[in-house]
Amino acid sequence: MKDNPSTKIQIPQVRLSSTQMSSLIGEAIPSAEKKMEPAKVANTRPPPQEPPPVEDIITENHAEKSVRNRARTHRSHLLERLQIQLQPSVIAETKIRAVQDRTTASAIVEAALRAYLKL
Amino acid sequence: MTVITFANSKGGVGKSTLCLLIGSELAMHGSNVLILDADAQKSCFKWAERCQKAGTLPSNLKVEPAATIEQLTARLGNPGNAEIVLVDVQGSMNDLLTAAIVASSLTLVPSKATVMEMVEAVQLFEWSKNLRRAPLRLVLNGVEGIDLKTVAFQDAITLIRGSRIPCLGNFVRSRKLYQQFSKDAGTLAQISDDPAKQDQVEKARKNIRDLIEDIVKAIAEENSDPARSA
Ligand SMILES: Nc1ncnc2c1ncn2[C@@H]1O[C@H](COP(=O)(O)OP(=O)(O)OP(=O)(O)O)[C@@H](O)[C@H]1O
Ligand SMILES: [Mg+2]
Image (tube, rainbow over all chains, first blue to last red; front, side, top):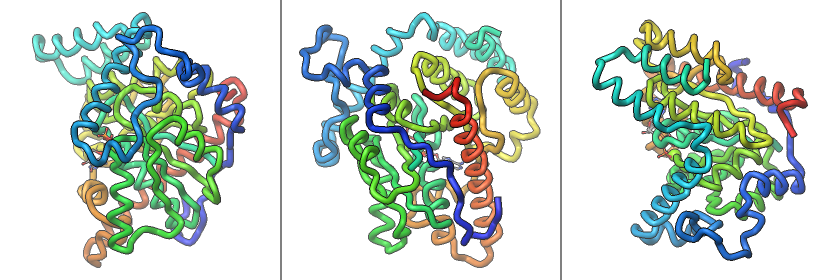
């Protein structure tokens, strides 16, 4: 890249149409499409629109916490949904092994990556 | 208009810092840049507010909060004169992160070349395979000069390159200047106008420009490969 700061950096322009975007989002997040329907599994699923409006977050400290908590619930929900692919036990195993075996960083990286990538 | 998201389910990996560094460097080179801050912490938005107060915010760099999927998609659908939109998301799995990833031409996943950070990043790559369209690139961030010589680091690099995780060729070094930048109120050049530090500033900016060059290549690759994009 030229170091001349006056040279404009050309970024390929690849814009999605609004239709493409909403179809991709709707497909990836079913709740984004069906947000008018009541949540079916209220205990595991946070409200579909999160985090809440910005004004609510900046003024109230506890509001920020509630956003983080909801994100956490959501995260566990997602992980649950993806458990087959992700095998969180591998992470725990790696952590434990690092402590127990005083193994090298390179060995753990290798083990973790190989496990995840099924190499 | 091109959209790039900065995401990692792990916090504190440098998403906001890289988003602001890349956004401000692109703006310094004349692009109209819009940063959408989709993290409740609003690190980018607060940085811009500080810059605004200090009078250092480039006029072609705008930073706005986007707290919901609706706000994000509305702005992406109507980006004004922005040529490039950068989206900074929260360091956890949530719908806003998913929406930002699928709506982007490229998602950068910053990670340190350490064990747990790599595992978390790999998790995100694995998860993204469930999405119809999710071009992701790993960006090694916070790399110390000393790391480069360690076996652990070299092994990590070899593994990444040999694995199916696409990674940008350049990595971001750990620099005091980057850390200062994320807490200060101005671009890299503005926060360190000490002539004795010009060399450091230039190296720090060059690192970001090299990264942008990789990003440009990655966007082009993803765009020309019909198997990867929708
Ligand atoms: N390359 C780097 N060199 C030095 N410091 C860095 C670098 N990248 C990030 N940092 C520092 O690391 C800290 C975390 O970075 P940052 O806030 O950008 O992470 P994040 O992923 O956005 O975190 P969060 O998940 O909380 O939003 C900051 O103090 C930042 O200044
Ligand atoms: Mg951040």
